[in-house]
Image 1 (cartoon, rainbow, N blue to C red):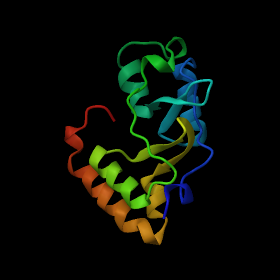
Image 2 (image 1 turned 60 degrees about the vertical axis):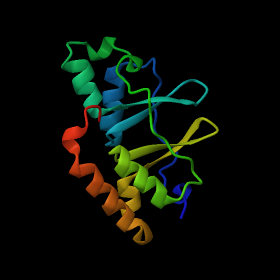
Image 3 (image 1 turned 135 degrees about the vertical axis):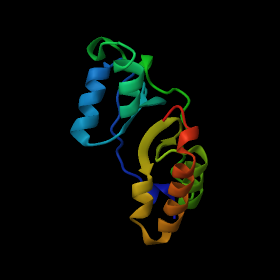
Image 4 (image 1 turned 90 degrees about the vertical axis):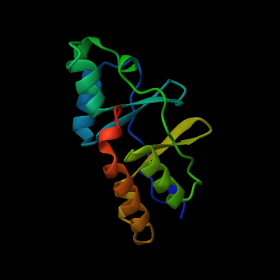
Length: 145
């Protein structure tokens, strides 16, 4: 099975020039924990997580309404292509210890795939379980997400 078969599309995203306050509202409105950050051309330039909002903005004494997303986002992002096998994507999640991956085609964001997406499909549930095991076995080693 391919990532395109299970990914969430379209992916909700935000501009790097938007404020952290807008990012927080967007996360809350859609009940999600990560927002891809895309330029006006649709190209993925980073991600911002709910944890980023707290650790890189609020806990650092910045004002969410006056801080741009680009100032706190993670710019080096692991992503996958829509034609990647879901098992390979799950393995990548486990190895990188991340639960969600932006799906990019020709440099542009076209969806998101999560462990939840993998676990909903009978033929990929074991891949999701293995990835989750890898992610949770070394949580203390993660400093960025």
